[in-house]
Length: 301
Image (cartoon, rainbow, N blue to C red; front, side):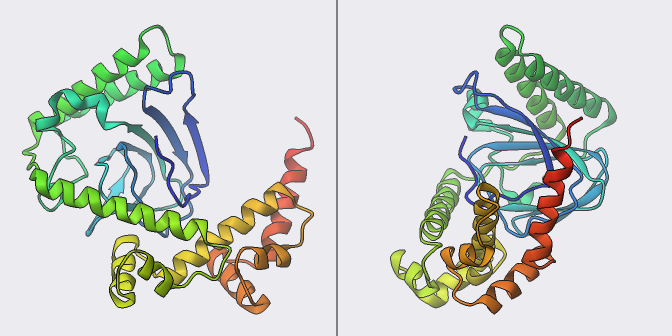
């Protein structure tokens, strides 16, 4: 599965995912205590089914705002931009899987829908809901214990879930030409993000990136913000701050300020201002907290 360009740390994530069967593109993620928001829209080249076990929050999927609460089931396809704004105590179980796992009915897929005509939060009849939740629990157990042929049982349960949902919902499938256009758009955004990430330690400008992708600066600025939900400058700053944090984790003894300059910041005051805006605390407070947490966790148990 493709890694997301800019990681969004969801506070506590336990992934039941191993490399035992790399050809089997499936994973289960248990996402706990979502107390931080995802500031960016993101997307991935796999499909997603999420079950809200506890708490509540809001999904932003393309132009739709979808409040979710305990018991809700949300599905997201491979070309939908989305982000999550959780509330305290929100906990989810999330299935990620490659589209090829359910390719048998590719001409009539649950996930090839026209987003303006389809609601990602499912509203199922009680009997269907129980059936879907039962299959999800079976999938979790099969993936956790990995008994012989577990992958076949997982795919079988995925088909049961999809079949039951299709019986309950009037899915409006998206025309193939529109799907191809959307896929091209996602591919171009991936390339833009990779280009920015590879030049983040330089003073890469909006005009430079726009020129690289044969777009005018004005159009590129609007295009970028529309698709990612934040401005080019804000995105670049988040990427730089994340790089600084990663580098400090690798070597806690290095200078924070020197690391900031190495990651593209040219001004001490600007770095402090941006860091505080993104993280809510000063660099000193943030990294002191990390040190205290490391000491606490290192006291043995």
